[in-house]
Amino acid sequence: MRLERISPNQIKYSITFEELTRKGFLQEEMVKDTFIWDSLFDEMLDEASRMYELDTYGAVSIDIYSLTSKELVLILTLDEEDIKETSTESKKKHNWINDKFIVVTFDDIENCILLAKSLSHHNIETGQSSLYYLKTNYYLTITKEGIRHETLYAICEEFGDLAQISIELIEDYGRAIIKNNAIQTLHHYF
Image (tube, rainbow, N blue to C red):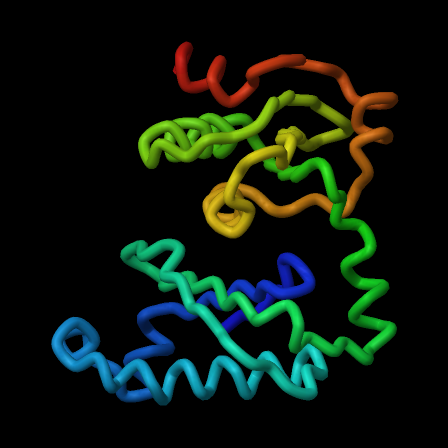
């Protein structure tokens, strides 16, 4: 089970089906019995409260972001008015998240191509995108304007990792492979 804060009021929760089975969740029951999810959601909220020192939270929405053969990825969205983050360490940890861009890093170009195909397949709108190469990694930058962030974050993390590097550094020192419309270009040619 992994928790990752993707914005001040959103937490990504990933759990493998193996872990669910160990907790007593059987695939047949997950589909038929909706009450079985209550204990999982309670556990998720307790863990998020401990990990991110959330004192209280009001309304919570939980979206099933992706469901693969290996894991279930959920996005917890907490009511913004109720978030009281007291941990300065947690605040520092997320200072690298850019307000205007999502930066995803890949070890190889294949995962970047798979991401472009997945975004197109799911009809997920993205902002302007560019692809760079720096040192040994590929970096895909995506503007956040007018897009659903939680969905985009989750799909991006299936194929790459959110990068803890500034877009300015990538633009200054990286080699531009596709300067504009990188996602659309990758999908079109591959």
